[in-house]
Image 1 (cartoon, rainbow, N blue to C red):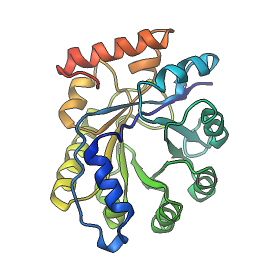
Image 2: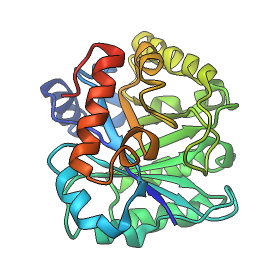
Image 3: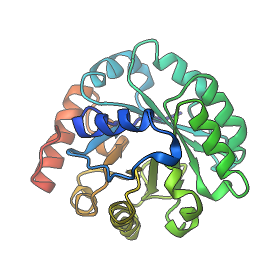
Image 4: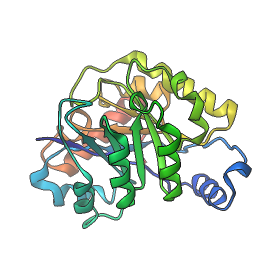
Length: 265
């Protein structure tokens, strides 16, 4: 079985100032401010890490990333079964970094409650299974002082989340079909990232934009042009580059710099 991980850097002063301001304001009195990510984040997906080297890889990544990405699949929404809330508990024994859970499940209510119970910092649900549930689950997450995210499949338009978009802390754009590692990169999905950036600027929304799927040397330049805040990297972009995680990280950093002309912070 294989597994994946995300990185999220909330260390910038602009982001922390906005977060601190919003924490002390009633929801209806928060001034809408555009979040500007001064640097991109690379969020390793732990679904594709080498679990035989779990402690070694996490110990290294703890010093290089700002969060972890955990895929939770129920075998129904997608035909695979992967990580679970139990895995997050094990991860926390050797890492204090925040965790972002990506729920690929048909019954999000069941899984959201489990993640709320363990105080998973980011809980991200697929828009396609939220008809009649979105407001209640987003409120449930926020009432627990956690962050709510929405994930959009490649064929799902951003207009589908307009009724509750102002409530979101994160929007993840799938650039592959969900549920499997190593799939074909779907370039047309990048248009949604650009549209979400423009909408955030126009409306002053506070969500961050994440991309998930086949983030690697072959796609870095195209992803960079679209401009997401967070790249999720898995087997093709990080863990599969070398068995040694330190060497793999250096290779990923080199690939990104060579393809975009930018350095990973």
